[in-house]
Image (tube, rainbow, N blue to C red; front, side, top):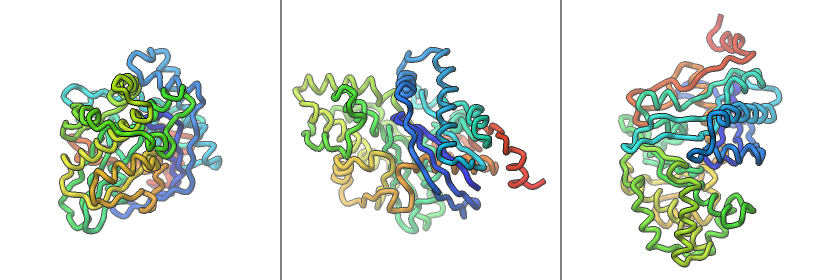
Length: 387
């Protein structure tokens, strides 16, 4: 089946699109990317998205219009990637809010990008709103990428850590295939690129959206005392299952950190170096505190894997653990999550769960998402189920 996966992450820098060929069923399922592309948001749309992520940043009218406009952008991205169309589209949409209560329970999650618009504009059947069912079942609604890790990245005899560093960091601790009764552990480790990206934007007056290759952070000196203080944040010691987002590690905190760093007498490079180290140290601390067994390898995906300063800090904090990239295992790290949402749509279409309770803390596994029929709906039903 030809499936398109669509997602814009917490950094909101654009829409990752992947046209995928997916065949079979677990545990004998194959999934490969045929082609993939990132379509940047128009600057005005991105600003509206970022505003909606801030408390009080968008009213009901703004959210309603934004939902339709993001749907239009996602549909245009799908058409641009595959003018010939696809059998199915899996759209994550754009997260604008993930409501985590004081006790760590997720009570609601909101992804915008109207599935009806995508189905109408593309003619394809669309699976969307993929986190809400897991939240309703008592789960965190994340990290959904762990399902892909479970299917495609387990080692025959060794534990692995599949670490994504997008706007937020998340990890899946994967048991080896030789331990069939062992269960994965998955959760958000804390900040990823969101804090670093916002800081470099503030420091450069918007001239830079991110610290390319970590070049600027590499020129700074980490304030170890400040880093230790930042690591006392309550989220890091909270046991899994747990998730977080820009509500904790977003623009508001970045503004605070910039002011605090300057008050400590640090230059901008030192501030960015220390915040980069915060991402690395929070990941390493999560491994020390919550890994069910010592991983032999950390497999990096997401934009953070290209930040040389961050990866160097992470290597030093993980000791002798091997650190590789998802490309070393046949998965394009820039489009891993787009592949994931194509895979989840495929599983939903075949009435199979798209996550496991140990991923999210849900009471049970769930078939994820909502299905909006496209113009191809009857033909797709016939080809899948016969009749």
